[in-house]
Length: 201
Image 1 (cartoon, rainbow, N blue to C red):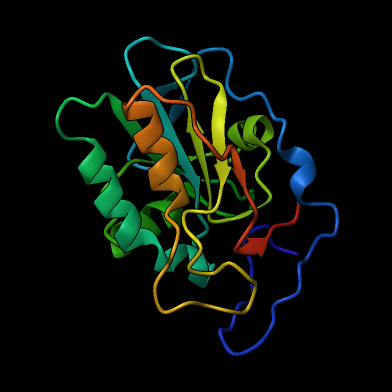
Image 2: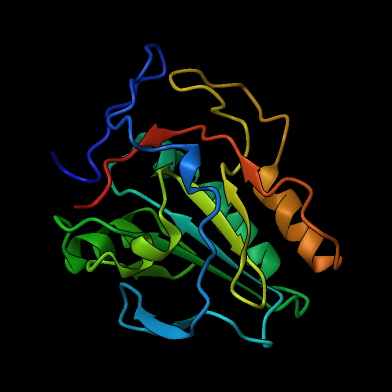
């Protein structure tokens, strides 16, 4: 079964494709050592601890998941908003699918007009560090590379197969705002709201 092949319809309930995914991965430490990964355009990005940024936002995307694709406009807005005013926030997407080619990932990025870099994690190195369980899933890391928030972007799709007209919580934005203000993130983990993914073997 393809890693990034998810079936989602708003009118029906979508069952998880893996019963092994879930809240057991809350305690993943983060990216504690600096290393480099390349995005779909060939640009190199440094991940890991650094005093040069307030936060690193990383969002797992899927080229085929409708929920993931439906968030791209919002993610574009957030990435541009946080890149202003010298906030020292880096915003990255990443795709981690061994069946997906770099060219296909680049095509998806261009077709959906992504405004932020997208890491091509063909080897699964980043996925092994963050241990995502669903798409889209957001991670916020502090300057030490520690995960201070992981989970949903907002509660627009708080239950699989159900969708609000508008979200009532903005979990990712609230986590980043806390770091900008130098405050602790109140909610470090927010329950999954999208589609489970099958773990890489």
